[in-house]
Structure formats: C-alpha cells, structure tokens
Length: 169
Picture (cartoon, rainbow, N blue to C red):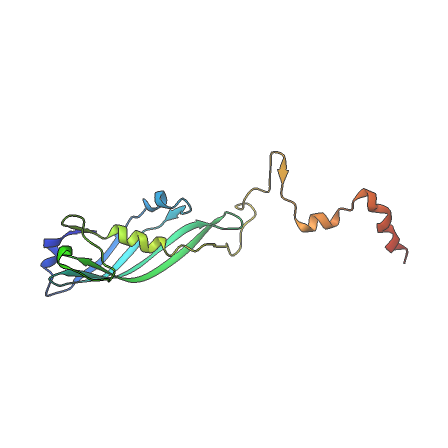
C-alpha cells in the first residue's frame, strides 16, 4: 500500500477508493504477544488536495493473543475506523496538527495501519472457556499448581485429632 506523491495528485478531483486485503504477519516481530494475525481487510477512500492526502480508513481483522490467565490462544477481532493525514509538501506547512510525512516522495500506509492495530491490543485478555488440554501446564519438574480446593481437603496430620472433635456431636 504505497503510492508516489505524483500518483496521488492525479486523484485531486476524484476520490481514490481503497479495498485491499493485506498480510501483516511482520507485526508478530514488533509485538511478541501476537501469536498470529489473520489477513487485514482495508477499505476506505483517499481525498487529495494540493498539499495533503487524507486517508479515511476502515480496518477489520483478527488477532490471536495469549490468554492472560491460561496462555491459550484467544481470537480478538478488531474493527478500526481512523482518518490519517499525509502532507504532500511538508516544507510548506506550519501547524500543530498531527500529520504524517512521506518518506522521500513515497507514502507508505502499512506502518500507519500497523500502529493502529497495535493500539487496539488490550492490557489483558481472557479466554471464555479454556480447555484443560490447551491450557498452561499444571505441573513440571519439581513443581505443581495447587488449587484452594486441594488444600482444603488435605488435613495436616498434626491436626487430625482436632478434626475428630467436631465428629462427636
């Protein structure tokens, strides 16, 4: 999703319509928590004027992230609507608005799309119904997970005599 500035200026009097499916598998290298990202559908339009290109984008797709509790895969669908502005003549513009500048004479939209997707990742995500087979291991070398129920059922042998005290009633 790259355009040369001169290519975009051809669309000054008519909008450029976007409808593409992009592969952002490189995003897994930028964020180690992303286990997979399914293809991202990018739709929208581009309005071009003499000094700027405005991209009205709608991004949809699915991220696969680890559950914060059990580490099982959780699919997180995203649906992002954003407007991004690129300056076609950055040297002529003075202002405090948030604009992107082209790299040389080329506008690359993929880094902007990646940033918007990374901002959608929640701090924690939980699986709805984690399967025991897919969840994190419950034991290993010299360790095991002990639940509260397991702890309550076992009576300390030193206190076994006290447990019989309540049975006499």
